[in-house]
Image (cartoon, rainbow, N blue to C red):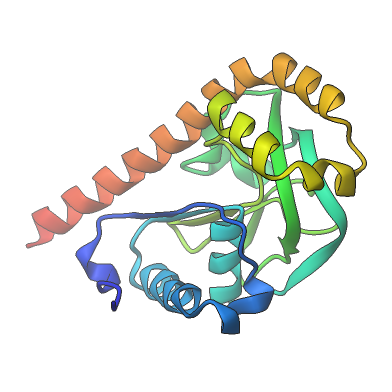
Amino acid sequence: EALPAAREFDGLVSLGGEQSVRELGAHGYLEAEVGLLREAAEAGTPVLGVCLGGQLLAHALGARIVRLPRRTVGWRELRPLQAARADPCFSSLPEPAMALHWNEDCFSLPPGAIELAAPAGPACEAFRHGDVAWGIQFHPEVDADVLETWYRSEAGWLEDAGVSEAEARAADARHLDAQASLGAALFGAFAAVVRERASARVRAG
């Protein structure tokens, strides 16, 4: 089934998944999503890509997607760069903040994009391309229920990352409450951008 055109949306959020941008040929629907995200970014439709969604957006904008030396699972400090101070989404984030990572791929900074956070690993952590397209590597959408599902279904990730389940759960207990504030701030700011853009289009006729 073909995806709708980007102009039919006020905004797009592309979330994570177990697939890899390095295997687009095996997932035709992801190739279609890459095209949709590229179309949206070029049209000025607000886009937020999270983990796999951020990698899809970065790929659509010309970035490299590479496999990490080892899987990354756990919490790392989110360190906004100076450009984040004036960013419509990142300027609203609480500081200091810890960000949850659960990934095996990463993206480089797309050509022409602005880096918004210091890298937590070997590649880009967060960027904005143009005025309203954001890609992030971390998981602000995840809560305790989602993590519990991951612990049950993705136990091999912890071993690959060199992290015990006890260590991971202890870190979750320290950071999950603040994670809710981080997610609410980021998604709330993005929703405000979507509303503002949609209202401007209505006024312009």
